[in-house]
Image 1 (cartoon, one colour):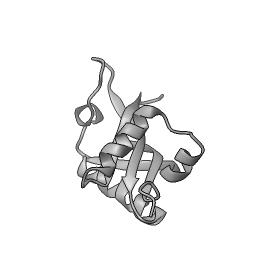
Image 2 (cartoon, one colour):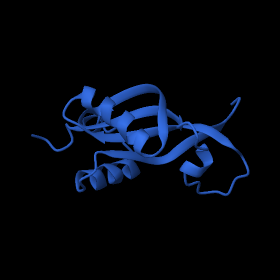
Image 3 (cartoon, helix red, strand yellow):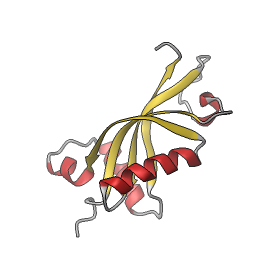
Image 4 (tube, helix red, strand yellow):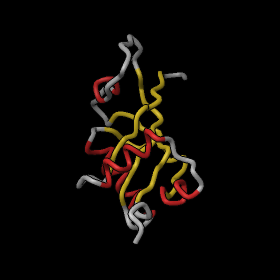
Length: 117
């Protein structure tokens, strides 16, 4: 079996779980006085089936005190590699996940937004 067939990348809208502030849950590269209420993020998962990838997205977000608001799309990594549609930085993150025991990774960068954005 090819190593990337069990990897998925999803574009997901996430927000804080009840009782949490989103700014406290994320690391921002730049210091900002903005108060963010959520973000769009690429999430990489390792799962045999797409159904399992969706479950992992929800479970992984929950472990980070976040909730999934919307899943925009999910794509198989092997297909994206075949069509040369992945950036080098994302491939490095996939390789890291491949060589780890983890099944969930929020890919850098995330795209936070403020209320009303």
